[in-house]
Image (cartoon, rainbow, N blue to C red; front, side):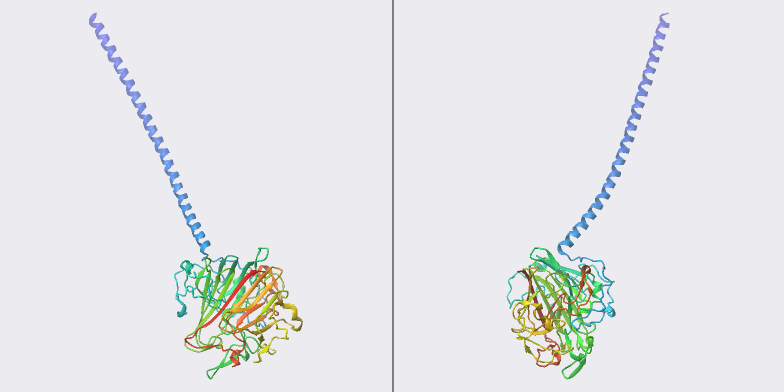
Length: 502
């Protein structure tokens, strides 16, 4: 009996041990599964985190790209070597009736522009190209703005040249801008032309004071030389011919029997290269260059031409035109052809503006506006503007207004004050200094219903031209100042426009 009891106890103990073991094993298995489940969940969470990171990386990449663009835009805005493109809003701005002071300039539709990509292009900074005028290749400062009798109030001319945009010769049409203080000038390399010039009035409101068009495309069909650089010989050549060194030359007649502003494809009708451009800084400037080939419009010899626009000092615009004949003597007479209206390009006529022209003599002309060869005093004539007075004072004696060359006082080749122009309504005043012997004063009498900027229609006397120059038809009048430039010599024509408030 005792043995049976012991055996029964052993069986119970074994059974209890087995139960405990099984229970312990099950507990371990549950814990293991729980751990596995936890690990799987951790992996899922981790995978989700990596996906978000990729998304974040992508967003960061895009952000960086945007930041680069922003920096580039900021850089462009600061240096403005990127040009502000405009929409072509005035393809039909051509006026069939428009003529230039006798301005019978032909439409520029015939001009071949092989590199023009349908009008405006963006100007981008590129590697510096070669300069056609070897005398001035690296003339960063050139003293072009030292225009007041060899004095310069601004001795630090070169400080901002380090930031200058040196660009390759660019033969596509573009829009360019210069800005300093209160002055903003917009230009195009079509004709090396000024498109607009903004300056505030007496109330501080900025206004555009030159006539022109909204679109460069319209300049290509322009007939009145808005803002253009004209040449090789500006103004008129009688009977479209002249003699030089015993040889007779025939130029292209585009004004009746005469040549006007260089012919049918003068310098105002071609694409100039841009070799330097600095939007702002101490002396914002742009340099246009053009090479006129031998025989161009009938003129002898290849001619390298440079025009530099520069904002200097306070509210001053310097314009410097230079030319170098390559191997033949040739006539050169360049002129700048902006139409000014100090009241604003859309302010109506300029007849109430007051003007002083420091020229005691003028060159009388015949019915075709060709000088007779005489030089006459202005005293006692409608041409007397030796004292500041309204333009309209003696206009009754002139059916189409003024279109005459003044023989300027003072010594040619020296900078001196030539003109003072005042608009009392706006309070704007402009003074012009120059180094040329003559000045063509034209009051825009031949302007006729020309569709201009912002839908403005320019009528007669909407703007006036102040074209510093040699005398018209000087090639056929030996007593007039010579226009002939020999190889190895340089033609240099300087103007300085000073703007202020009266």
